[in-house]
Image (cartoon, rainbow, N blue to C red):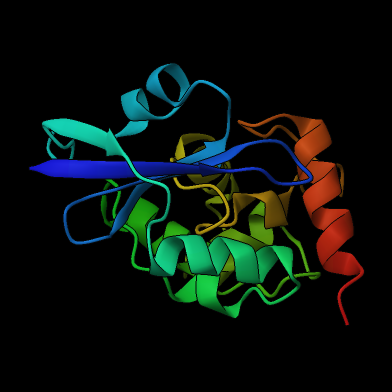
Length: 168
């Protein structure tokens, strides 16, 4: 299978998305080196045999542009696929339901996924999430309210949250 990738300049740095032949997002994030920082995140069972550079990924690129313009709905609707167990899949799905501008704590995310005592697993879901922005793990904080870590840098996470908090 041949996949595609595209990079857009954003106020937070270059944003790259990698999609499969059907346009399903397999990895995405803020990086200048997708070969090193994105492609290894794709599980072998999902990985394309080859990834070609494209200027535009259709609905995926449009969703990123919409998010940058203050409309997060298209990004939440873009199809995504990543490898993980049933509960990780549920946590990633619940992340997609978190409204922009309303971050939640790990414990709240675990509760949303039906397992209120699984805050550590919620943290693991954020740590292993390969699909930044489309699976918005930046909207999940530590239980004490601090930002916690972020694959793309805490500074980027803070800017993303600030941007979303200022949308109407």
